[in-house]
Image 1 (cartoon, rainbow, N blue to C red):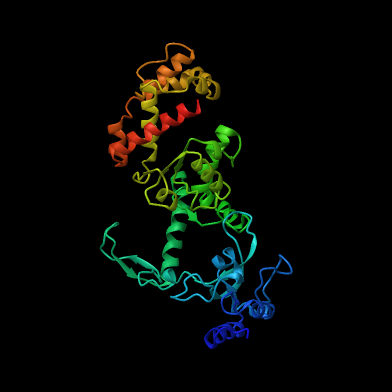
Image 2: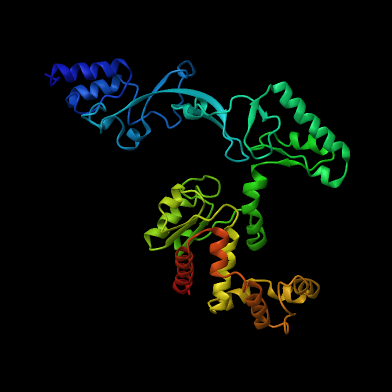
Length: 390
């Protein structure tokens, strides 16, 4: 007899009819081999380019992704409360679409199992236009429902009236924002015909912020740091455990570094996945992160912890000391009390020490609302990492 019991037979037969996987523990070895042959699932597909037939796209059954990663059809039994390690079959809807995670816009088929129902059917979701209630002030949060026609007419008139003024301030008072600009430049061209540079996108406020400084420092807009050999990894609103842009290829290297003893610091107002696994989480108030960098530089300068050989080789300090007009401007604004004594590297360091002197620990705590002990711990980590590297 192949079947161990009437119950296991019914269980196996039912899932075979449904097109689900046949797992060890339901049939004996010989019966299992025969049933797997009849099943649509197999651990040895004929081709790596498996593509579901289009007639099944509205209701396609497939194993749970975790089951494939943990053995596929070689799982033990069907998942249930009494057998939590068993296999699970899901009903998917397959939809052709395009990825908007970067500018490439690759064609993909989305396997939809859970279509953001919490967003679609959230009782607090705003499903229609709102306008400020009559007599209420900006910031009071008082709104009334309006129509799409009124909303578009009101917005369009305000934009037209502003553009018609023609002065520089008015030209900068209208902005159009989109997420991923997957329209090949058509929309920005419309705004340019109106004489405006008012087009804003994800690239402007996210990607460009990361790429601009790396272009300035490393002459490459998408650098690949030596994460794996780092001693301290400092992510400022960047999430190796969350984001794909930049960090999809870096997460594994960061994990390698941590296995070697590297410390991970994440500075972010929210407790992201990366922050949750960090050695130190710095939850600075949004927009105040720069105050922490100013404090770190001030401490290193005042305590003579700067790697002067590195700074002298890699910073354009001679260019700054040679720009007398800008140095005079800094004196005029009170950033420094006097012009540098000379054109030597020591004069540059002395100027920096005075320039950063106001940015103390008290200043950083006040600006960022981060506890002093966390900022002290962060500074100690920087000093430890510098010592370990040198």
